[in-house]
Every structure is written in C-alpha cells, then in structure tokens.
Amino acid sequence: MSQAWRASFAVLLVGALAVVALAAREWGEMFHQWWHIDTYTHILLAPVIIGWLVTLKFGELAKLEPEPWFPGLLIVAAGLSLWILGRASEINIIAHAGAVGVLQGVVVTAIGPRAALVLALPIAFGAFLVPIGDEFIPVLQAITAEIAVALTLWSGIPAVVDGIYIDTPVGLFIVAEACSGVKFLAAMITLAVLVCFTRFDSWRRRAAFMAVSVIVPIIANGIRAWGTIYIAQSQGVEFAAGFDHIFYGWIFFAMVVALILSAAWRYFEREPEEFGWSTAQVGAFAWLQKLESAHTAPVTALAGFAGLTILAGMTAAIVAPAALG
Image 1 (cartoon, rainbow, N blue to C red):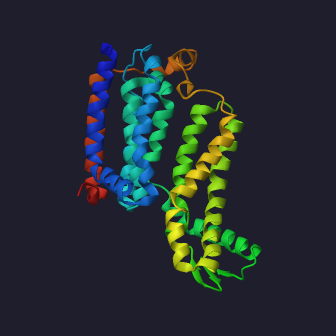
Image 2: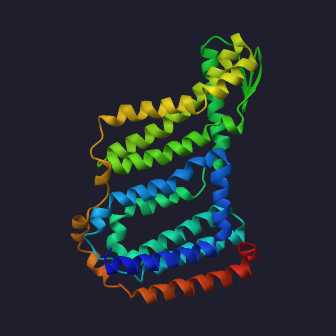
Image 3: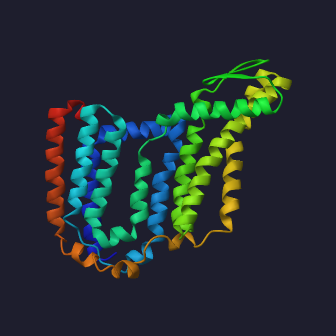
C-alpha cells in the first residue's frame, strides 16, 4: 500500500469511527432490524457485497494516488443534516438514511473524487443498508389478494375478496403482512441492482431486468397465495399452511430467482470485475481536473470531520435530545 493510500485510509478510518459513534443509536436500530426482522435479513449480506465489489477494483485503485477532497465535507454535512432532521421528526427512515449518507460522504472525502468514481458502485450500494420495505406492505397485500382471488376463481373455486380477506368454501384466508412478499421483493431488488451494474452495459437492458425483477416476484407471490388456497380445498387448511411454510417460502422464491437469472444469462454483457469506470476512463474526464483542484491535506479533512461531528452533536442535543440518548 502506497503512502497516499495509507494516509487516505487513516482519514477514512478515523472519520468513519467518529460519524458511526455519533449516530450509534441509528446504526444499532438498523442492525436490530437486519438481524431480527425477516424483511431486512438480506441486508446482512450488503457489507459483504460492498467489500467484494471493492476487492474487484483493487487493481484499478493501485494505479492512482488518492488525496482527501475538501468538497466531500459537503456530503458529510448534508448527511448530518438529514440525520438531525430524522431525529427531530422522529422518522427513523430519514435518520437512518442520514447516518448512511454521512458514512458515504466520509468515504468520498477521504479518497477523493477520482478513486470515488472508480468505486462509485460499492459506495452507492451502501444505500441498501437503510431498511426500506415495510412501507409497501399494505399495497403488496392488496395486490397479492387480487391476484390470488383471480386465480382462485379461474380455477373454479368460488371466492369473495374483501381487501386482504379471501372467503372460500373451506374457510377465510387472510393475506397477512408476512404473506405480502415484501421480504423477497426487497431482496430481489437489491440483487437486481447488483446484477444490473455488474453484468449489463446497456441502460435499456438494465431497465428491462429491473422491471422483470419487480413484476415477476409480485406475480409469483400472488401465485403462491393462490396455491395455498387451492391445496386447502382438497387437502385441508392445516396441510396447506404447512406446505406453504415449507415449500412456498424461500424454496419457491429461490426457483423464481433462478428462473429470472437463467433467462437473463444470455444477455449478460460483461464480467463482474469489469463494472463501472476504470482508472483510465476516469482520467479522461475533463471536468475531473477542476474537481481535484480542491484536494486538501489529511489533517484538514480530519479537522473538518471533527468540526462537523461536534456541531451536529450539539445541534442534535438541542433539537432532538433522544438522538444522543
């Protein structure tokens, strides 16, 4: 590791520890959700994926000399402002997004715009650390119920739908929150973004793959719900519930993922290590030289982190005391 990389890494490490300590409550809340809530367990893989993406760019990063970048502190300041706003309004998703945004800003500040552009995908992928998904459960429940009742009627079974309630001859079925398909959809979107930017060059193919990755899981979840109702008509509700738990869980959706990826395989345009911009491509950006004129010394970047962290902590203590409690 060169002297420049050692200096930037030191700035990154100190800055990251400072902002994570400041937003320790938010990081604790997020980890609790990743670990304990099924909708977000896939996020536990996000740091691993980010690390993997960074390792794929080691060769390119070795070709450049990073320097801390003063304007990156504006990203840190924006993230801290979002964090304070989230704490003051008691809207966790905003506070969590701010905490992650601050860390992304620290990375950009520590390594500079040239290295940040080479690592644009793993830095941006950090957004998936924010637990998002439960907000869409009511909509997904309604869609699942509509698909399930349509297929139930199509298969010759009388059914009446009232919101998320489906009344059939063998009993009343409820599309519960756990049956909305949100946890699989959230995981599928995360995977789809990774595939889009590591295996495709064309934006049209990326858009098509993303659309398929959203639509197919929603339809598949409706089919899953219908399958449970259909089996219950002949085998009983108790058997259908057990079958749904065993087969229609991750096994069924693993098959859906395999189907989507196998269908897209022939259209892949590059290998994962070719994602993003190379050092040579970044060096050809004429506007980059203007950005790099704002490089700063490591000690200045550290002072900036310290000042912003202290200011944010004092502000949070005034407008949102619970943020530090």
